[in-house]
Amino acid sequence: MLLAIDTATRLLSLALHDGDRLVAECTLTVDRKHSALLAPIIEQILAHTDTKTGELSSLAVAIGPGSYTGLRIGVALAKGMAAARDLPLVPVTTLDTIAAASNAANPSLPLIVTVPAGRSRVIWAVYHCEGNAWRISGEMKLGSWDELLAACDMPCTLTGEIDKDGLQKVRMARGAGGRITLLSPAERFRRAGYMAQIAWERLRQNDHESYPAAQVMPIYLKPP
Image (tube, rainbow, N blue to C red; front, side, top):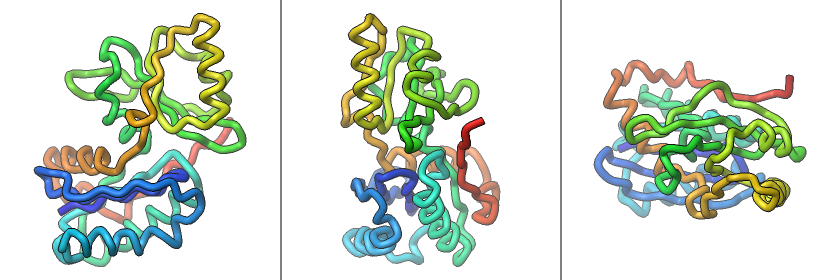
């Protein structure tokens, strides 16, 4: 059984996945309450699914990019749980998790995946479809929504956790003729179930020893 933990932004998302099916999932907007809610919600999920801590065979954790405080809380707890029982800990970026949920996106168009960075900034990366999966192309970037939209190769599809300012900028760009397909709020919602699915795929492709908890580090993007 794999437990996936994501506290990278104002969302808190947890999932249990046994390798064949998603057993449980919980995703909430908690703003800055991660430290108070994370451990109790994990306990509730384990209790409601009759899962003992000893039945966990691996963990996955969101390593960002995202909020400094949120990432620190989630990564620290995941590393502690993994180290206590010498379990593999699979790091997954927030952008990879969002991209994995983008089944409604046109595979022939680039997919722009975003997460908020605070202070009216946004983090984004471009993904392209390879086979049946989205793969990141190039580096993650940090900037304003104006910079993101100016850098987009259109037509394109946009997804991710988008704040009100970002939505307004996107709507203005579309109104001015920008060929941007915006996925629905449900399709943009970052869920730990997708992160758990990614983690299982990576565990099947590599030895469990390839994911030592001690080597997992958060990704913090800073302006140049």
